[in-house]
Length: 124
Image (cartoon, rainbow, N blue to C red; front, side):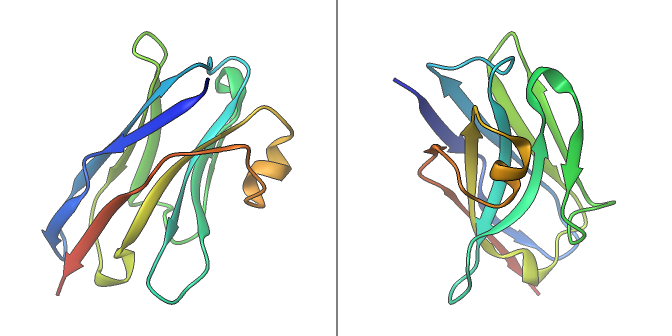
């Protein structure tokens, strides 16, 4: 059974940093594409960053480029999102996602497995 458990969210001032973690069980990163999405109040869920299975490539949304870094620790089966220079518009629930299908499917948000989400709030 696949489980994704996020942690690391919280309240931070604009310009600050947070590191999100996603502990994965029941899957291996060699088979699944993995990534982060977020959903702000009143908005649709949107893509943030992803890693192609077996570390075959990294993708970022334009809003994340230069500020966020996605990484994985295969030994711990854990996905990370380092977020720097945070802005109030980054406020959202952040979700970890994993899918064994195509990368384009994951990027479009059609995903088999989601975590429960972790709240990130950036104050101005």
